[in-house]
Image 1 (cartoon, rainbow, N blue to C red):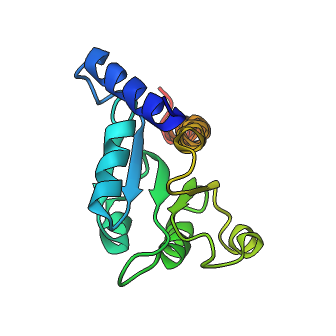
Image 2: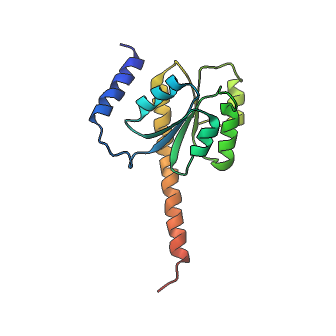
Image 3: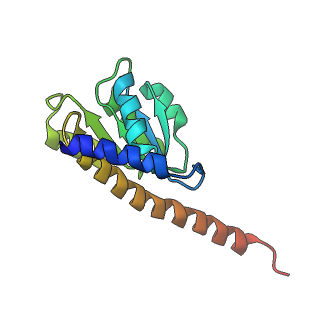
Length: 165
């Protein structure tokens, strides 16, 4: 049994055991033009996360909201590639964890990708599914803390500006 099939079997077992409540699970966004890849990622991650899947960069950019904890982003897509989508994400959400997930390792030099786009991770399609699962897990943990701190700061600011009794 390969590590990939083991991961898929674990995801299936978890899915069968999970509760129907998705509201309390962290949200992630998958942006990939390849339906098979998108569906696979939804299958793998939907046991732990609320997964929104988008088939284009434009659709994905419209789906981003403040409670998203991680974005899995394909690099090579028609109309708008993952690199320009990442730049657009950075303008609106500078600390959003973006994980590039691509079958094309030679599109750009890896050092240039790191320096230019500051991805949280870069995982090769067809490579280690476990590496992608771990990257998403870590990104979600870190971003959940950021989101929680933002909400706490807003509550403190609201309490500070509320009139004293």
